[in-house]
Amino acid sequence: MKEAFETEPVRAYLLELQRRIVHELERLDGQRFAVSPWERPQGGQLRGSGATCILEDGGLFERAGVGFSHVAGDRLPPSASAAHPGVAGCGFEALGVSLVLHPRNPYVPTVHMNVRFFSAHRQSDAADAPANWWFGGGMDLTPYYGFEEDARHFHVCCRDALAPFGPEYYPRFKRWCDEYFFLKHRGEARGIGGIFFDDFNELGAERSFALLRSVGEHFLPAYVPIVERRRSIGYGEREREFQALRRGRYVEFNLVHDRGTLFGLQSGGRAEAILMSLPPRVRWRFEWSPAPGTQEARLLTDFLPPRDWISAA
Image (cartoon, rainbow, N blue to C red):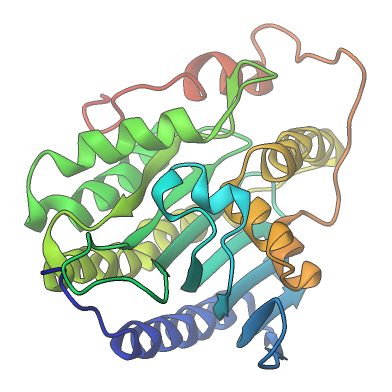
């Protein structure tokens, strides 16, 4: 028999997580988020509801987006069924909280976090059919100027989020993150990684959901201390220019590789909410590279290649 899974506890947890994260980010920034609720009526290709919380031109964040969505549809888009050919063409239900924070100060890193639940079904699914539900998510850090202290702190929090479920999960999900947040066309990582997991149901319903919650609960402890250490560092146009160039890599990844972005767009989701992850100020320059020996060059040579941050001296 496949294990049944009730979505209401997931929905309740995700809404509360969104509320608490927004509250803490408002404390850090000093300004309030604008809340944009949305709804897709029954009968369409995609139906459901959600709320996008956006803060722009704040004291700390140039753009911060924290979104909740709960949607269902009659047919999985290609981005969701690629890893699960057995459920291609199925109906689906998806819930999640996703956030991307783009601080103005280049010494404060951009961060992404996502926690989600997904289920696929056919009308004819028998009670003893394999479980077609899974959890996914993670968090990753994208600094513009690297600090080993920050990288180690972030990864220690990621490890601690997974430790109650077994020592194998942090190295496994870290490696998955390093491999996933990689720009194949550039041959470089998007940032210094963190943890990433998808298609996860191996611990059963109760423990798999507990793992998801632990990841969500460790986000603020992983990120807030870094913000508080770096937000007062002075910067000028040179640092802002480098930040804008590196943000270009962020845009490239989200539009070319990111499964969540592709899923949202392919399923007919709300474009404004899906693309809230994009930074407001970004640049591309032809064949640009930082001068050797600079802080900017050190990001590429010392921070972006995957490494064991927890053991870093």
